[in-house]
Image 1 (tube, rainbow, N blue to C red):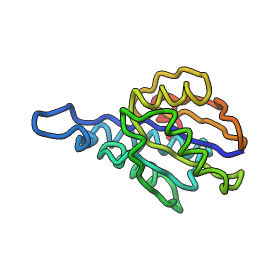
Image 2 (cartoon, helix red, strand yellow):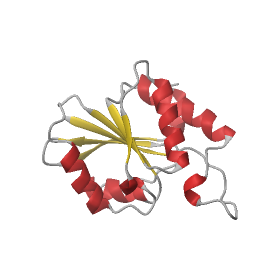
Image 3 (cartoon, rainbow, N blue to C red):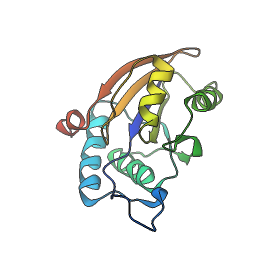
Image 4 (tube, one colour):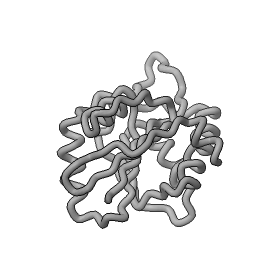
Length: 161
């Protein structure tokens, strides 16, 4: 069964006049806590075989933290559909197009934003999850259906770092 890790980005700088939302980076605290959370995720056995991130800076930086937590790394990509205003239906179509050739051992990490993370989880699995920053929801895909696996809060993940 294919595993999807849906991860919300870490703590980012507050919006600033003149700075596009897409350019807000992680704060120093965001880097620290996200690194610890991603180490905890990997220690739980969730080591991605590939990852796709929103192109927004804070999501891309969260993906860097996830890559740092692994020993071998993994291929990465970016997809506009993972932005905060992403559409769950389009994401489902995109996922279904990405996964047919994937082996059952595939672990695909997706790094995105709120409210999209909660909306996508509900759309795919029927489960509503409140995503804190650096949280991760595990979703399984059996080739036809998506099912809810688990949800890890950032504090739970950091405790395993």
